[in-house]
Length: 230
Image 1 (cartoon, rainbow, N blue to C red):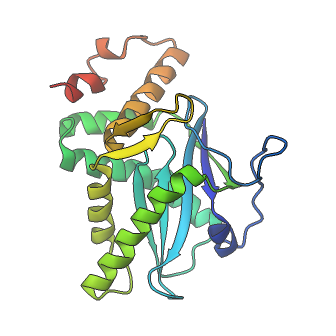
Image 2: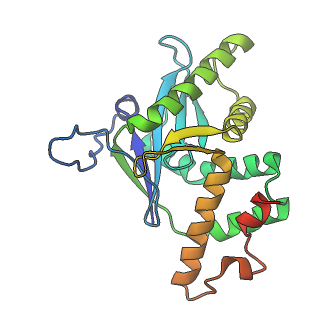
């Protein structure tokens, strides 16, 4: 399974990378492909912002394609592409766990089980240069939260605790998007949608290992719908 990391032009420049672009259909603009997470590709859009005008301190904003689940990586020292990749591979799971614990969607013990099951899935990082314009608005909103909060607090760098607090707040608030397939408006909570997606990945992994195909029938696996509709 690919952990697809789509870097904006600004992040590509910051990393001093020469990332490939995603293939695009003839007649369509290159570098602005729509991202979608499925059973083979787990897509994240990444952008980097200055914490204030041309500041040395920066923040990398990471947003998952389907759920718009967002988290922040504060940057005060130069990060290499390899270092950023390593952080991304585990921080999305840690941030999801932090949000689930605060949101109390599932018991703490089941969060541990969820992370254990996800650890059995091999997520292979794959970088591209791309900016999904449908996600850009959500990232811009998140960027505004960062810059305004830092200004109000009189801070230059985004502390880890504040980065977590902001992410938890944003990921438990309703989001509205237009489904490009159905052209209908959708309203959802990012952490709920990300959890549902992870459940699907776990189910697929179990089927691939010839395990039970019924995720609800396994006492060790969390059934997301049981908690969502309580």
